[in-house]
Amino acid sequence: MIDLSFIAALGLLGLLLGLGAGLVALLRLRRGVMAPIRRMLDAVSTAPQDADAAKGGLLGDVQRLEIAFDRMKARLEVQDATLDQAFEIAGLGTWAILPDLESVRTSAHIRKMLGFPEDEEVVRIDALRDRIVPEDRAAFEAALQRAINERVMTEREFRAVDATGEVRVFRARTGLGGAVPRAPE
Image 1 (cartoon, helix red, strand yellow):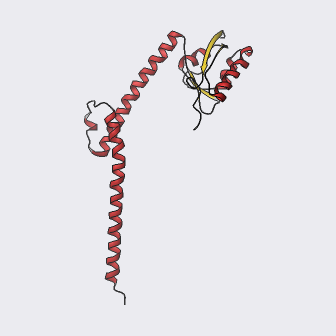
Image 2 (cartoon, rainbow, N blue to C red; image 1 turned 180 degrees about the horizontal axis):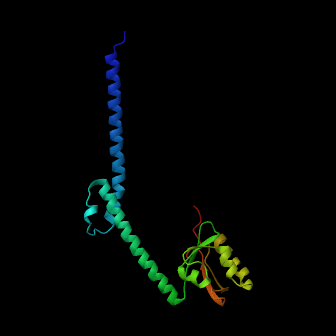
Image 3 (cartoon, rainbow, N blue to C red; image 1 turned 120 degrees about the vertical axis):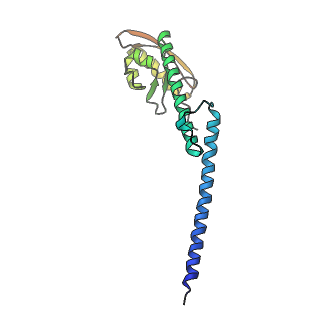
């Protein structure tokens, strides 16, 4: 006959070993998560914490990171608004070709000048091309393709119809230091 107590003891031993291995894995996972969180917390300023974020451990660290990210986001939004105001005052704007090579992310002032919806940061290149006067489209297209294909800086002046229907002169600087995304590695 088989001794059932021996089998039960082996099963219990296996269960304990499995639980122990799981505990070791959880501790390693915690250490793997804690180190990057600590580095991020060390990188942000040590501003006073509110009472709700006074928790210790991993949850407290995550909450403190969330607060730090919220502060950074608020600062970036203020800086972005300031930059948009400066662009408007100076009559400047920016655009960057997105990796799909069919659309651009534009500054608010460019969208406003050209009559694109101000709340949509991404504009299709075709829509931008449609605003360019027909006589300047070929030169614009050639400069754009050269910047994309050869990954070199190109600068081109072109005329485009603005939001009010007037023709304005624009200068585009496109290339690795400008609006073209980096080549995939």
